[in-house]
Each structure stands twice: as C-alpha cells, then as structure tokens.
Image (tube, rainbow, N blue to C red; front, side):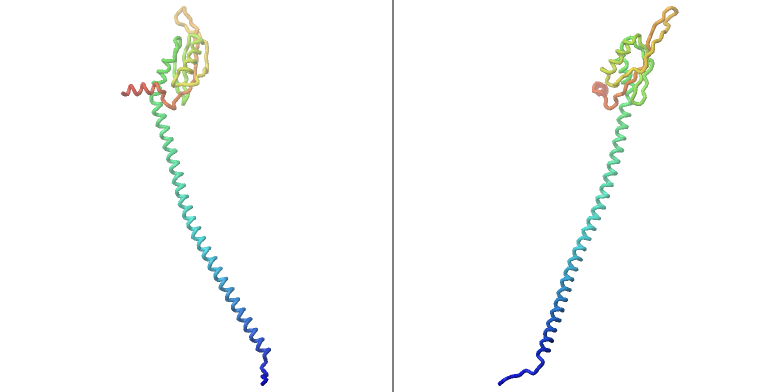
Amino acid sequence: MILINLLPHRELARKRARQLFNAAMIAAVAAGLLIAGAIFTWYKAEISTQQSRNQFLTSEIKKLEAEIKEVENLQEEIAALRARQEAVENLQADRNMPVYLLTEAVTQLPAGIYLNSIRQENQNVLFSGMAQSQERVAELLRNLSRNSEWVTRPELIEIKAENIQLSAREMRRVFNFTIRSQLQRASVPEGAASAQAQGGA
C-alpha cells in the first residue's frame, strides 16, 4: 500500500527551522546575559576590593603622616633641648673663665711685660699692656700660641713705641701693645679639670 503525504511539508520544515533559530537566539541571548552578569559581578567585586584596599592605604597613610608629624615635633624638641644644654654648658664653662684667664696671664707672661687690661669680647680676648722691648712681646705671643690651654691663635693687633718718664732725670722707652686671641670654650682642659676635681675632693 502506498502512503501519500498531502500536508505542506515545506512550511512545516520552515516553521521547525524558525523555531530552532529562535530557540538558539534566545539561548545565545541568555548565555550572553549570564556572561555579562558574571563579568559585571566580577568587576564589581574587584572594584569593591580595590576600594577597600584604597581605604586601608588612606588610613595607613594618615597614621604615617601623624607619626611623621610626631617625629618632627620630637626632633624639634630634641634640637631645643640640645641648644639649652649647649647654652648651660657654655655658661658653666664661662663661670670660671675670668679666673682661668688671669691664671693663664700670670703663667704665660714673661718678665718685662706689664698688662693694663684683659678684655673679653665674645670668643675673643684682648690683652693690652706695656713691654720693655719688642722681643718680650714676641715671647708672649709664642707662649700663648704654644703653651696656653685656654687661648689659641694669638695675633698682634698693635704695637707702639713710647717714652715714659720714670723720674725727673730718667726716661725709658717702652712698647704699648694689643694682642688678640681666641678662647677655647669647647671643653675644660685636662689639667684644669683634674685640678678642679682635686680641689672639690
């Protein structure tokens, strides 16, 4: 027996193909939406993670800035304390400086020299006086430059010859001089320190 299909098979095939295409398109759109949603969720998670990292870094930077400010304040306080300590040490060293200078003048002064004044100007000391000869002044300069523990770098500022009258008949030629030298205030010389310690004991 022969069967004959009288239904419109071409239209059914087209309809089936159209349905398959629509189903494929829907599946593709759904897959695209799922992939886009997954990518969006991943990016959102990454952005959130990065924002939390940024917030953590910002808070840590603020903490570090506060610590740096504290360190700067501490450094300023340390510098101020050092300046005060230095000022106190200078005052302590200067307290006995006139005694040391007079002792030094007596020790280093050669015979034939008479001092009129010893004047301190900041770190400089001016010795003014009279000498019997220029050689005596040169000897004083040598003594101050080589043997002195309290003054250094002596230099002759002025020397002038002058005649003074000792009596009605006697005149003598003398030399008025001025010597400038610098103080050594940084530390007490060892000899003076040991003598001061023995005196205190």
